[in-house]
Image (tube, rainbow, N blue to C red; front, side, top):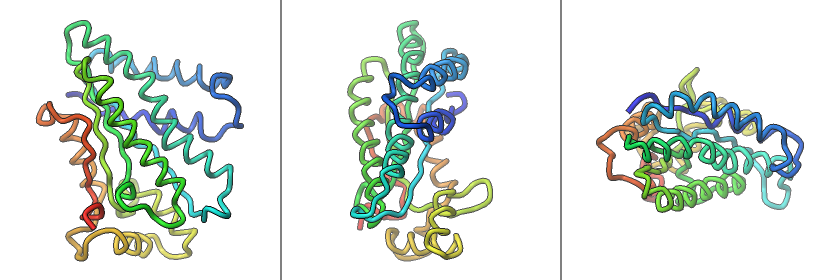
Length: 232
């Protein structure tokens, strides 16, 4: 089905770290539109999926939550995904109307949508939002043969270049080594045993499956890849 285009981070950073003004007035919106148009050129000629993988988190209690952190997390994790879809769905619909295979959207949420997590309520809310977007878009875009699904990963092992940057960052706030933070989060969520610890490869395998013809009739699905986190 062609390469998976991970547009989310490149676009989300445009919106997440700028002064908060109404989005319709942000010059960054036009810049992102042009950026998507450039990246959209290969997308218009293949059935390449758009994968929404941008995600940031921070530790905050609700009574001491920092407003700027709340806005940044929602802008990146939720609104960023909406902007990516806004500028990639059009070319997919055009391909469908031209009689070609249209495309797929693969969102990345989190296993926390199944159980919540203390001190991560802004992050949890943003990931619940992605699940809601997935079901809405799956229904809205079905007439154009566009599949929309969401993967809910468990805590991913940190590793150089291929691991969880989020665990790396949170481990500093927790004042513990990244692998210890990974084990702490995994023990809280995953089923007992080393078999149920998640790595980046587990998530990649599911993305490639959803991008393949083997997932032709799967849409609107919420798919845990979480070592049993959402089963607890």
